[in-house]
Image (cartoon, rainbow, N blue to C red; front, top):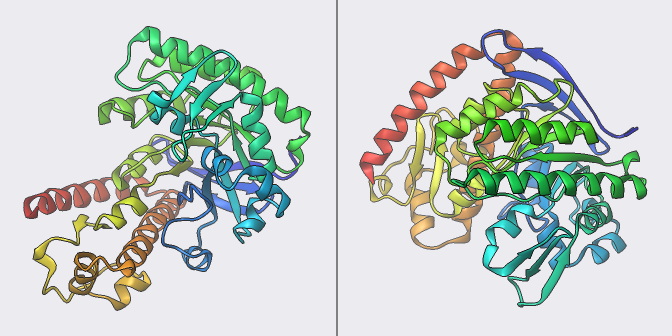
Length: 384
């Protein structure tokens, strides 16, 4: 029994599948739906831990693959674990590295035993088994550990997706066994990853295998990797209804602000995505009226904040004109401020959705957001 982890549903929306809950970890509790800023290398790019605390981020994501390569999980463990190493007292979820291995397909060799891959840093070869992936994450001391999975690129054939599901299920069983051997359940939780591309029968088969093994939560993997947006939404809607209601549902690597709203409506509890941080570094900021490309000359004399309705420190102090100047001047402060705003915006969306679900008017929020955000996105495209 995991004494440091728990999840309970607090409220559900009668018109959709949306729900609120409380996720408890060894490093604090948080309300769901929750968005995790991505801190792949033990840092959310351009943000200090104090800035993340100012945003009231409760849970961030680290990546076992990258931290294994540099600086090494043994070093991090010797220095007190990832929380102490990066001076982050709140919760951390670590991705197993399955997606990174997928994205480095030309540099890896897959087998039943595990995956052999070539480091993108120095070309050295490494071999990761499901057991070693668990060893790494237990050494890091993250609150939520992810199993090793095979992610098939979309679109893919039924045969390819079926092989990925079978291998992921077998690897998941080995991960669970190793997790118990290490007696990690006292402080850490282990999530299984559902694969199956957009084939609903395969998704169901994958989930059934994971439930039979038994996990603390269930992640939906292998989406937002090439499939049509509507196919992603249909897949999410179908599989969330089958995941045990008492377990948190985590949609990996998704997505746009609209994706968050659409997938909360379909019953998802947890999200992560590089979009708010990566897009900020490339000059795109998010508003309630859609994305805005701050690098565009349109804003060079605009004294308004990014979003006049936003309460973040950036919008309270800086103009679009100044932020554009920072970006085109290649100033580091551009990434700092735009990232801070974007993360505030993403976390604010989650907070407003939780509030709407609790009040019983999530459907109203959903319809209004879709209308205003999509119309704003179309207007911004016209300025590019």
